Image (cartoon, rainbow, N blue to C red; front, side, top):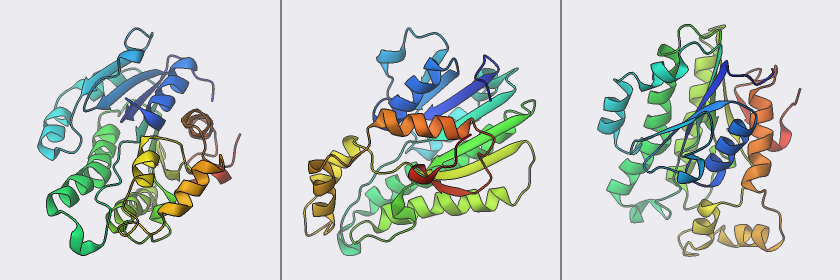
Length: 249
């Protein structure tokens, strides 16, 4: 697929890390971007094709109000191909189940699960004229492998994987979906993981070793692979994937 003005993308959590790298990659390829996050990103403010809206995605009521409006529909109007990158997420609360704050659990489930599922539904409904709609859930290896101390993060990312598998069974020819693990990316979330208390996250030393040995991917590297895959003809052939094993072309 050639990126043209007929391609538009929505990116959640576009203010930093992988979300910011995805936004920059898409804009560089001439794809208009609507960034959706709790705060704005002034680094993109003057770039052609960029719009942003402030929405607290961990607040279901606020997100519901936003989705009831016309912002998505107006942004995607006349586009032939529309993309949704459900990137925003959080790793907290970390620790054994008895130590997890119930309010933090609610916030994590809303941001990591409710928001992507709500956005996916609204996105599909708001783009009836698009002949090609593609939804990308940013998943994690934690969706497919359990980690001590990460029960909430693992469960919420696994939910995205299963949502993609189920939506794929709807067999909507104009809609493709894939839940993609981006690899271990050097972001603020990784720094947060490495600062976790060892008794709450026994695997911390593994992530410290990855950082020390230079085995973390940069956000730009992962964003490049993700965007290339999403724009490829093979996107959506499988419902779950790993960026390190993505078919290209």
